[in-house]
Length: 408
Ligand code: ADP
Ligand code: MG
Image (tube, rainbow, N blue to C red; front, top):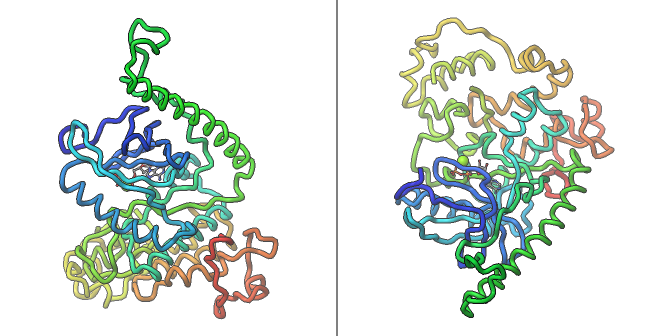
């Protein structure tokens, strides 16, 4: 990691972009970057600073991400499309080379963390629906307005909008070492040349503002916490693998556990790959068929890689016996969901898992599904066919559009 071409080592209090951003604490990291909470002195708010590894291939990937994010951010000035906003980008030179840095709005934990915090016991349907709705609003924006395929949608890449206090980890110091008190000089004023004095004053001002900001963020996050459960929207991040639908340059996409059958089989892809749900390459196909039934022969045999997995009858070559189940059964037996909830949820989920990509609903269509509609009291709750009819959304006649940023 931390060598020539690799990560840039950061300490709390380091300054970036000529002092505009002051690092606070590490938020996370990926194969390409480390991500730091930073204070943006110019806009007086906390941001997430992603500092890319410096080697050319990583710089290339960062430029790729900037291309997509700039377009995404530019076309969504109201910031309501549930996609991470890019605030700024710049280059930072350090001992390990030149690092491209991306500045994002500060967000909270990923859905993976949320699931882990709940010890994989699941989260309530109300939250699940809010999260689904946000993700679908984001995908619909990407797909229908921009023609972008995310192609790496997974729990780690959906972040909750933060209700936590970003300053909870103590800010150790906003001062760079060369601005600290000179040794043996308790006041630190005497012996400083005018430039040093000026820098010191500036650092003090920044620190005072930080303290003030911290107070107000803590206060606002307190009131947000008491509203816990009312707003839980989230945002899609990590456009490192995104592509334009009309300019695909690789046929190998998606993190393995979430890979759609057409990617495994090499059958070409489109927006609908973002619409598959994650399950845990022969085994993966077998699991899919145990859950969803036998893959239609035409689909099983038409990919460029089909022969690796399927014989000419469309049967898996190495796995003979499948333990057939159904989404609804698994929801009831494994996840202990009531029969009626399971039926409604499976009704939403199964079309997304269709082996035929062209049959999967679009994000816009999903947003109209009864399962995602509010009840009259603006809550989500069990919705039966009658409720669906009452609000004009019985499945066969679904017509009302939603996905407006005000009613997620
Ligand atoms: P990589 O391309 O290296 O995988 P990511 O963009 O996925 O980097 O970010 C790495 C991690 O940093 C994320 O998993 C998340 O924990 C954290 N992170 C990224 N962006 C933000 C943000 N805007 N706010 C808060 N945390 C973030
Ligand atoms: Mg990542």
